[in-house]
Length: 222
Image 1: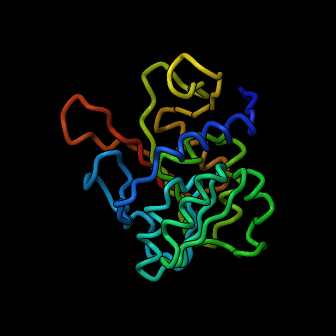
Image 2: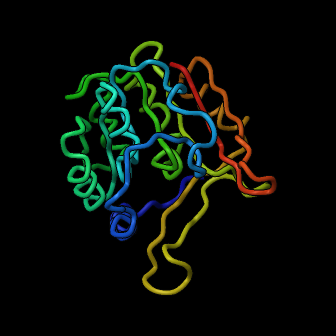
């Protein structure tokens, strides 16, 4: 079921988040889970020459990849986030651009300024907050042959599937909200193959402590 995304309101929400997301002493790092040093690493991307992070946030993962000689590009909805990330990682080689991801990908479907990508990825980013029925075909079009799409986010709460509304900062104050998307692993796989991916695999990486929230990790090959 389609939900009425209000992009202006979502931009305001992520601008507000950006104000508190950056730490002056943060270092480049790459981790798919919410637990530092836990779970798989960048090997899930293969050996890409050019990557795109959708919903790149603070840019720490992009900076990590760029420092290792990978051509690293990021897109984020929040102009505040993009400005902060570009300033924080100036000189790393990573590039940051502001845009609504569906529009951005539709305008750069493998023939735009960046060409195609060997890997597209999202770490608790745009893949969590964008309708997969619209997002996945666009990602597939922007991948080079044999390219990969990898994303991570919290697993679905049992019985709560599809788009889920999320208010900013609890239940008081200005009504800023976004939608995030949650499905069982098998459904994520089906959505990806329907979008044209050759193979897809989704599973939950357990938390380092029993009973804590795990991480859904999904990987698909073009």
